[in-house]
Image (cartoon, rainbow, N blue to C red; front, side, top):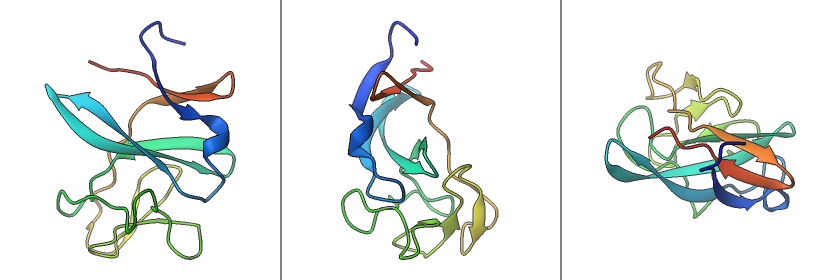
Length: 116
């Protein structure tokens, strides 16, 4: 684990296909909203920004999955994204996926791995 990794949350806070945890990341000198979710046992984090226009995805605070719990969904446009890759699967994202944020799960916690 990188020396300057930042704790996001306890790993137990993320149920598979359940609510995510919101946090901020520093990119290009500014704080940006991001989120982390668990899908099929692994954690995945992305900027909280739709690929279509820069609006946050969650339809309620921390709720990023659609009703099936198989896809991440933009509450504004209905665009669907693959939780494991952020790839656009349909809707107004027009092939533009989510921007991944590097995280790792270690010792029962989820850490942000800074890139700046």
